[in-house]
Amino acid sequence: MKNILFLIAIFTFSIAPGQSWVKQYDHVNEPCCGLAKVRKDNKYGFVNSKGKVIIPLIYDEVLSFSEGNAAVSIAGKWGFVDSTGKEIIPLEYNDALSFTEGVALVAKGDKYGFIDNTGRPVISGVYTNARSFSEGIAPVSNQKNQWGYIDKAGKEVIAFQFQYADIFTNGQARVMKGSKWFLIDRNGKIVSGE
Image (tube, rainbow, N blue to C red):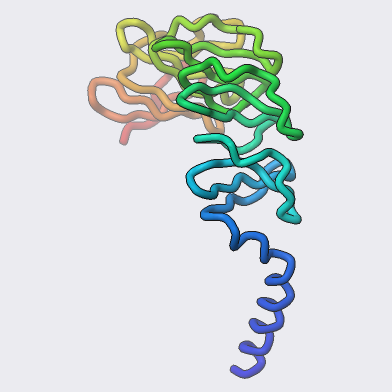
């Protein structure tokens, strides 16, 4: 028992000096792309592994880095910064999700679409709701609040027929149809019910 306590004490003391900067923040996320999201006094920013502030704590909300960019928000408007803190896409969106597969989901007003890492629209904002791309397709909701799936060209690949649709993982996605949950494959075929 003493050996275990001794090892725990050594482990704690060996980590504590290198991580003492963590205590100055209200919240610290695990690092992603070399930067950790931090919060202090309800403002967010990013620090490196040594605790040095790389992106100042000036944002009301931030998402973790993905594909070299992070979604950030001030006063309800979202945009994107790079790993140096440079604003690469202006804070002009009502909502945003992290980049996945080279595109990010954004909303202007109540319409969702997708942009590339320069801010250029790649799929027009015509959807009432959407999720990120995964395995080359994304679940989106049309004006009738029916969910289906599109590819990166904006082409419908699984018909709008669901009350809700989630992203694909390992070739399957969870959907709701007729108030029941199902798993579908990439062809839209039901493979199991819940």
